[in-house]
Image 1 (cartoon, rainbow, N blue to C red):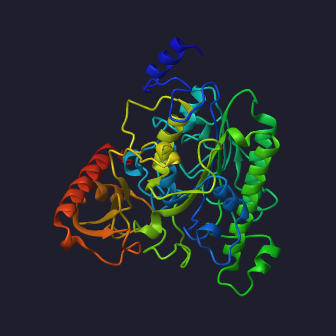
Image 2: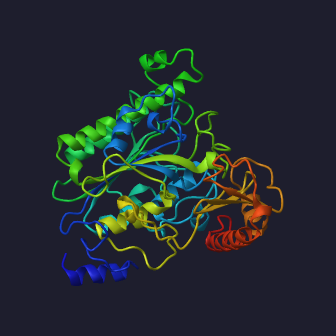
Image 3: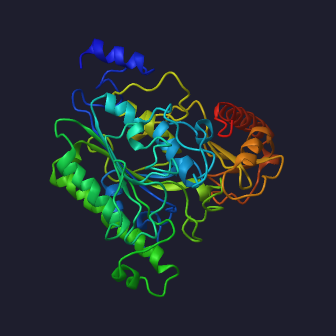
Length: 459
């Protein structure tokens, strides 16, 4: 593609014009491959290098040793579907209408009008594939909702939600629109098999690639090989611990294939989680767990590797999150970032070499079903916000919840210094009235903007 064709295509797509190789850290004519691993409900301290006492994760640990460990990395939301939508679009979940996890009886989905990283990179000549959990619509086969191929993935192998009936012998995978039936084995290894097969057989070696590897582990209902479970005999939830180790082994197999094929040196790799764990003891000493906007629900482990651009064995204490992935990948590949819509994330590339992330919008989380319902992070400071009325009854997202989202207002706030108080035990709002006022203004503004843009699924 020559310069004129690229600029014409970028304008038509609503992208900021940026030629390949003109981005932060991108080598001219040698755009990096991208592999994104995401666990499901993995807590901050569920990886051995992040403090797990009984879990062994040598593959993920090695990935961090070969690259960078992020100590202040965040999910897009405290539960599944919203976080995944934020990762793909660079936009806060409320803004794109992903207000909660997607149950089986809701019109909520990732709209085809949203622009994903896969779509952007495919226009740049990338081969694209998604393997593993999807959970951005409630049905992958009826044609009622957009599926991964409608969001830029050339090849996909996915489940609409969790592995069913468990991680062992799942029966709900769909490959490019066709149900596969029962698959023998454990979900993470099945997902790794598909990723490896695509790398080996389907990916054009001449093109760079973008590969999502989204595991189901350790979301309930857990299952793992008996030998791994036996190793944890006597521990609480041995199947939970064992399925994380099985996922680590699956991660290692994909990474080994990159090495074998000579691709690792030019591949950016991220491993992270979609939200905090539901399991007590898995979220370090953070307050809360999955489904809460406290740190325990959103503060997740993350490691990144990009040889030649990220120093091996480095650590990063700059706050960042999955919402930053789209602008980061646009930056390091030289792809155009969308200019026809709000992008809430910021490029993490400066932090790869010890710099700061230039962020115009604070990191923001919202989940209307729990208290507090909203949180933002600005530097070392976290603000928690409560809504002025109780949510209508019902666990799954429904029409009365949509009406509630439109009318509820943030009216009570708590302030925490995360550097001094990572467990969010001491509300210091009264001690810092100016900071409180400034952060309240920021929170209310971004929340109002997201709610205003977010679609009403029942109109």
